[in-house]
Image (cartoon, rainbow, N blue to C red; front, side, top):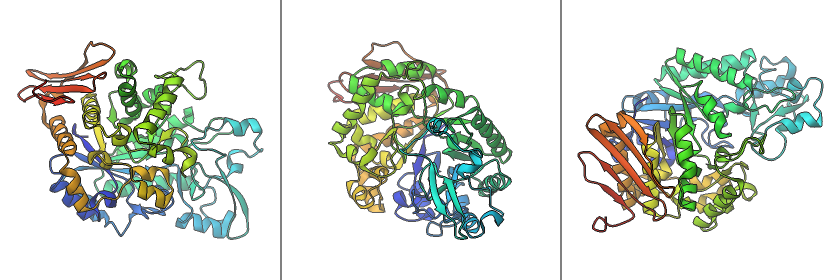
Length: 493
């Protein structure tokens, strides 16, 4: 992967069109900003029950966006990352329809997980309580197949997203075929979506078990055989993320967004500095993604609160969530938890710009912190444009995460690009992409608790970020360039 900033985007929600329109945008308005792009699900269809994360056919590009040839053309200018949704597939997929029509006689009988497949002797209350849940309720859907058979399907997320048995021959063949299709179109990297839930075991949590790690190892080796790097997407206790990082190419630094918000809210970098000292360096740094702002990633281990504390005490974590709601004028509260569907218990739905109270200086300093940490930065398309909470879209769909999934048009992209905060962010992106210091050595410099100082050095080249959290000010000093000052005027600095 290039050591340059990457873009995370839906094809249609940024370009206002298809893959060709996005490609044109990357070569014109966004020229020189991104070394890679993570295309959020572009499979058929992009508008199912979960914004493309429930594809009917994982090997077909939605015809409204283009073709595999368009994906391949995009790879000539930027590295492309695509999602592999390993845990489930759509109840509208040809495989599930065949299973529903034929039941036990279907060649796909066994591909789709049932409660009985995991609990052949039945499940006790203790067994069910042991299952780790990202959302309220049990992960089961009672259904009557088209042929009249009654089944209890395992559905971790929604009834339309039916979990598959990745160990079943049909499941293994299905996933292998996806990798092969992506490799043929020159996709360089895959993101394993919901892989933490991929393995189920009676009496266990069914989340990030030793068997899950083994599956991740096997899948990563298979992907590398196609020349594809693997990113694992897991929201979990922070030490779990450290362990995962030892086994795969890349992990997300999901602890960073809430820790940056915590640092500005509490005017201390204590927790953030602790994380910087121990975090894995093979991380994609993010402040925002298509999902909400993770809270579980810096909290105590939900399985053992007393023995495994988080990076932030529970009371401060609770206060942080309230601060986000206050900064967003209560808008995030309307999109989070029981207020909207997609009930992720560990996420706050809000744009990062609104979570920072639309404070341009602090927002840019947060981005600078992201860019200065070891790893490869990814910027979500809404965050790139300093997007604000889309309350109209939330009202129409009642899907909490849609508050941060705005549909832009070419005109609204151009208008956003003209905003001073976006122009300053683009300047920071270009600095991160081109300055030689970022290919050198990283240091966390000594500083007071209410300050943060990060430095990169490569020979005679250096780049230093200093942040005063108490005042919400800071600056970037890079060799050969004028200082970039945030929160105070250049004259006052």
